[in-house]
Image (tube, rainbow, N blue to C red; front, side, top):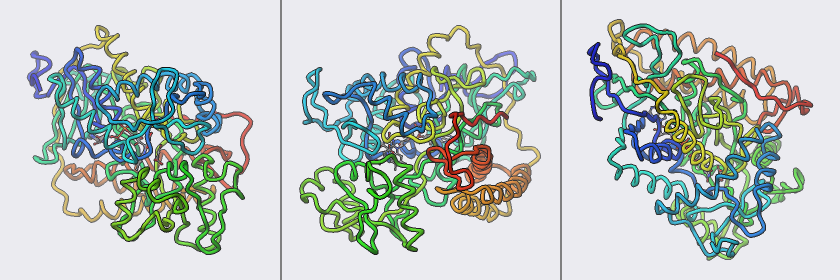
Length: 544
Ligand code: FAD
Ligand code: SIN
């Protein structure tokens, strides 16, 4: 942190940087490393730096690197999975920038698996395969790619004198003109107010440009593979600051989350199916995916998740079986060492028998609307990664395209900021956070209760298969909860849980409203009252 007051005319405490980044995952740290070539950057994380989804990614990163593969094939696969709702310009932008992004990561020291066929550049990436991809296209570090990527990015950021990493700060709201010492309606974003979890104080962070890289909103759902902090904070903050939000009904459910009474959200990577794993009904032993789709286990995720859901509901099952035990044990352990170890610890030997799996929320395809430079509707505010709707994923994300999006858009935000630096005004004096009218809460139980309620009804009423009646029930409940949470928020000092709950309510409302708005079934949004595809693919765009 390099100074305490951005504007000497009015002495108001603020910590001021050139650029402020909220989020220390793949998107945030990619932007930070590029910006730090010439700017002072702060990166905030709401817990430890590695707590986002990035560190949890298993499968890998999609890029055209196999001999015989082409950009056109990757673009086509992305748009087929996305149900035609993707923006072709964005898909081209991301796919064509993928090999360079992988190259940057390799140079940072990410130890990708090698030993595959040699391509035209003399490289021998080991590429795995996942659903919806017509080629082997996934670069990976065994079955723990995200952890390796997160460590490499963090190490590089920590070693950079222009980057200040600030964990344990929960961003509450973006700073707008109305928070200036001299009130303004400019709509420009000047930074964030953030809670220091340790001291309980709310601090003011200002900058010429702010990048939201806060990840997704998976924890709106009872069952999710996403980390605890995926509460849609960035989406809710941007929405409250006046930015449009798009395609929030497109919630991706992963078909194969481990079913275990102790371990609730352990993912079994899609690469298990890519390497020959098959899905079976545990009651009949029948391999059912060919009955649902000619691509069988390698159909896109929405298709496989719905098939698993249908088998479970029809036969009253707790789970279905994913089986790769027909492959040689050395092959299974070699490809999936972390999954093997984890499951052995739970008494499941995947070289000898099947894995019990269920579908669970996995990825937020919708989010804050951005253009190809990562710019949002608010001047001075950028966004990258899972928090955004960039046009890449459309109605359903193709496996392993999301880390890729983080690297390409993290870089794009940074490039735009650097290229337009002279047009970004220094932040004005900002009023400090006002706690004069609130007290400490005497009813924390309300927060835990509301969390549980939201996650339950979102799972039951706004899940894999929807009906208009159930969506209306969810809308009714969220309206009631919103009033309660607003009253609570207006009366008590903020805590991390309260900040997250306020955002969960906001995001759940956006998901429900978007789902009610879409009068068709496309990609991840499946409503039995509107089972057909509309003739035109149109984004759902909510305007604050
Ligand atoms: P994240 O990595 O989630 O980081 C979010 C950051 O924002 C964190 O640092 C968090 O602390 C911070 N933050 C959030 N709210 C606040 C706040 N209020 N204040 C301050 N900081 C805040 N994708 C792939 O492409 N390939 C895969 O193999 C793959 N596997 C996956 C496996 C699992 C189990 C999961 C859950 C996801 C997987 N994904 C995969 C998806 C991918 O991991 C994520 O989409 C991606 O990592 C998101 O990166 P991000 O930088 O946008 O956000
Ligand atoms: C997985 O490994 O199955 C997850 C890949 C992804 O989410 O893209």
